[in-house]
Amino acid sequence: MLGDLVFSYAGAQIRQLGIVTRPAVSSPKPSEFGSAGTNWGQDGWMVPIGWYALPQPLRPKEFISEIRPHLPEKYAPLNGEGDGYQDVYLAAVSDKMAEVLLARLGAWGVDVLRIARGAGDDDGAVRRVDDALRLVRRQL
Image (tube, rainbow, N blue to C red; front, top):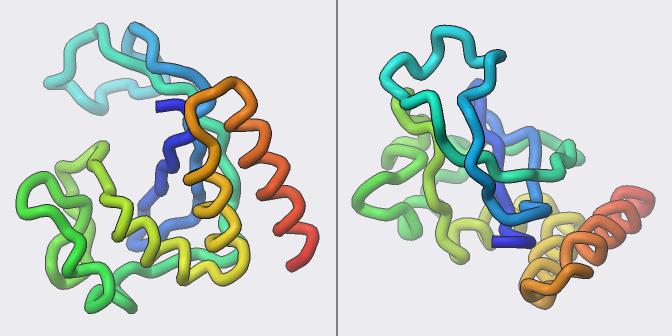
């Protein structure tokens, strides 16, 4: 949904926070994927996302005890030890898990969560979140 947060996890770290900028649209598999996803169909969905570098990368393994209670039983992005699943491309993150991750980012994360919660689904939501991210980034 418009304004949803997306955490980019790779190499055992979350380095980027994304904000969904428009609804998903039907799209062919990107040629940049090459042979990756050979079991995927050629048609799928593309979700436009605005990406923002975190002020500091997060290593979920370092605070897995805080995350563990919020991991779903099925289709979790991380196992109970804090390692990412290699076969997971996209996984839902509960609001409570997002709160834990954003709290680890201090004022930047708290402001993002506050703005995202109040953003709603109107056209100005992404602009308000974007403006808040810029303001908080300047304060760091």
